[in-house]
Image (cartoon, rainbow, N blue to C red; front, side):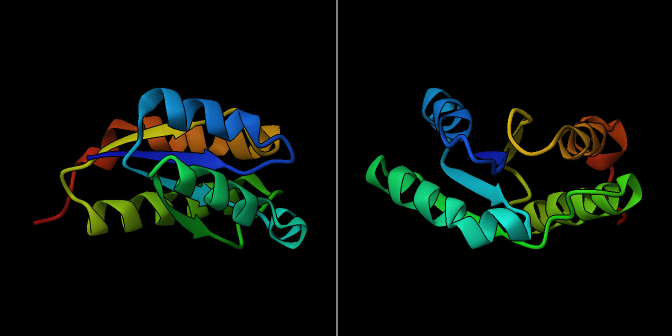
Length: 118
């Protein structure tokens, strides 16, 4: 199973192209409150559904404060690993604000995320 994690932004195409090119089985749409209010995750869900790609929206993503972003990204990856422990996880860092993208890249590229407590 291939899971794509996408930071939702105003430009849907930044999230759609990687999801379609990678042929993701599921896309986690990580959205700030602002993106949620604009309806961007719902819009992406509708488009991806037409291509047979399942989605799950993760809300309340902080858009400021690196420590909060790192902690939130850690919770997202833990959630995915608990839900689908054998899935390959790919992150699309083209959406969201720069600080969000950097925080998610930091957490998702850490080799420590592959070690689980027994």
